[in-house]
Amino acid sequence: MHSLINELIRDKFNNEILNELTDSAVLSLTDERKLCFTTDSYVVNPIFFPGGDIGKLAVFGTINDLSVMGAKPLYLSCSLIIEEGLDYDILDKITTSMAEAGRKANVQIVTGDIKVVGKGGADKLFINTAGIGALGEGVNISMDNIEIGDRVLLNGTIGEHGIAVMSAREEFETDIESDCAPLWDLISKVLPLGGIKFMRDPTRGGLSTVLNEITEDRNFGIRLSEKNIPIDDEVSAFCEILGFDPLYVANEGKVVIVASPETAPSVLKEMKNQTLGEKASVIGEVTGENKGKVILETTAGGKRIIDMLVGTQLPRIC
Image (cartoon, rainbow, N blue to C red; front, top):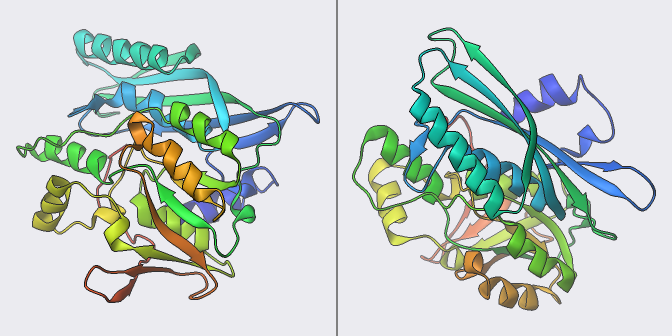
């Protein structure tokens, strides 16, 4: 996917806004007023999974892409691509779920589209959502802000979403539920503290992919502490049995924050005061060593390189 975006999208649609490759495009209406604009498509299989469904995922996923840019989510669009023969009751449940998710996040779904394709032309239901958010004055979330010495924070345990979807797909018995949730409430509390350089939600490709995107072609590296990365015991056991690395498993209610060393303690404290940040942790540091690489200090006292994910570990998890 990383190569596909660079070769087919970035090279052909080349412009300074797109080339930032941020979760949302930052658009200037005037010198003072800026909006964030994002879009995403959801093809998760199965469309219902522990802790959520494709509709809830579509709403919260798009909200989070705006939120990690420091933009308050305001409006969403909703486009449904429906396979001929889909039960009306299923569609009713999904759209009800989307409406409830929008109300929970105080975001309105204001426009959309419906298309029906022939049997086999889609797998039950695909959803595309686009979102608009208001960027606060002075907010500047960018990889270019990151400096050596900055701290890397995470708001909670990783891997729940990918494992919840996989367990539903393969009909495994587990109590693991998706962490699918809107991040704006948490982010809106820590942004005013200042010193936040960069944020991103570790969805497809998990925590490791986000950190590799941060360090790629940069004059710094990231050193992680394995003991500080929060992982639920059941998720860890499930990954061990199936041969997955939880560092690469998708999340839908987590945010990676890079903050200055001066601000990081207050950011961590505030995160822990929030429901979605009770298990927050400082998981690493930006260093001048191992430029362009992510290095994990293991609990056994060793070190290993955390590479970009090659291939698809868990297909169709979002």
